[in-house]
Image (tube, rainbow, N blue to C red; front, side, top):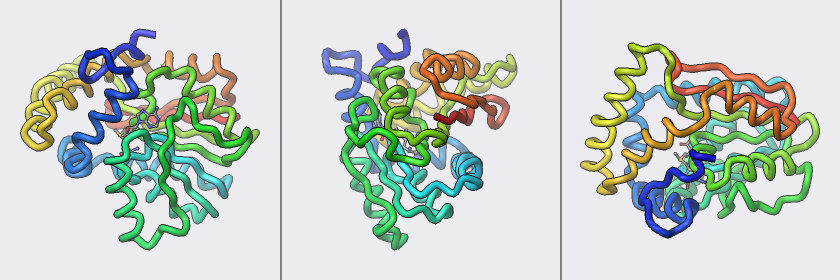
Length: 242
Ligand SMILES: C[S@@+](CC[C@H](N)C(=O)[O-])C[C@H]1O[C@@H](n2cnc3c(N)ncnc32)[C@H](O)[C@@H]1O
């Protein structure tokens, strides 16, 4: 698929290696830039995702592409027995572990190295899986989503939060300008990685639109799939069950 070939540095390393390096490079500024560049909206979006899980009271939770652990920490309100966060960037998780410790959540939340496409938990392990801004970065989207379906329990829930490309012409014009010029400029100044925040726009543009992403989930045998756009279509929450 086209989006699987969009990479940060366009060199001969695999997408996985390039993504891990990019997030290691920007980890020290990730939380700050995330809040700045999203005008602080991201926390509210994660809260909306967590609400979708509340009714089923998941006990075993997996936060894929956990990064600095914000989604895992947000899931703590569900009072599960365990939340495991996995990521391919040790740099991001180092900061995540510090945050988990600061919040006194280290008994509930554990962060471990893991690639969504190859994690080896047993079949039917998790009641729920969340992924925040992770799927766009997978080396192979369908392999990743198939492996996650395997580790989800029957009836288990998958909630994905991801940027999307708005449909409204006016919003799209602003979004394109903002992500093509402002975000890379601010990202370059603060994170010192020239490509990271340009890759963001390229990867969002190349990623399947809302309907196509749901079609992929259906094709891979996820059930009860749906999506909801956020903030005039600049992001979306995808919901599915096994
Ligand atoms: C934009 S950050 C998102 C962090 C966090 N989920 C959040 O909501 O802020 C994306 C993360 O996905 C991780 N990632 C990318 N591909 C991955 C994969 N195949 N398996 C696990 N983590 C992955 C990156 O290392 C990075 O930390």
